[in-house]
Image (cartoon, rainbow, N blue to C red; front, side, top):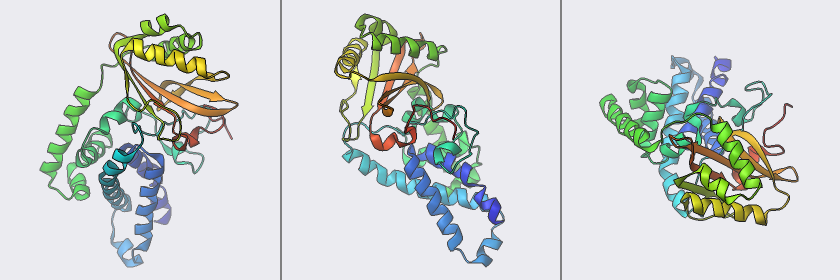
Length: 298
């Protein structure tokens, strides 16, 4: 049974990252769940028919507590708080290291756009929605995590679902091509070309965490964003821009002398122009990007 319990780790990391938006917090939550499992007397462990379900319930409860306390922490955070960006795993067999980022399945439920919508939910809504709608856990199991009735959990998930429908812009194809054109216009400091690529109502949100220079408030409007980006390009000689997947969708990475300084994720409007840009500059959130923008096989 021990090996089976260890084998649950990948699933638990995937659940916890979607619940928390933070790799470090997700790993801590999963470690705590395992600590509680191994703290049980062997006779109690033997009584548990499904250790995986037990670990999921405990991880979910830990994440619920973390989400409750995260509200206060994020209010004290310098500037906007954004979820941790995930690199693509190009060229590396999936899950071949102990790094939690390697355990993550990159699908539509980890795109930056989706995670940002999850941040607008109450902790209970987020847990009910992620466990049921993303991971297909029955409401009877979700009820055990939230300590509410299955009917109440169903209502929480429905409320969360409405936020997803109203919060996420219409999907659009061709993101890689649009991101490539943004990169070229940015490198050329071509404000006119940038304005053409940006939705007039576009919003750019930056996360520096007080540890790296970043706009403390969102920059709103295509022309304002274009001028801001051109200004950064002027002040940042020697910066190299790379096209890299960010949370499974085409994005950009800026590095200098081999160090990743900035990761940018994009979301497109229905007409294919850029509607949202999320810029992560907090170095604590970029550790998993160390070295190259896309880690090479080890």
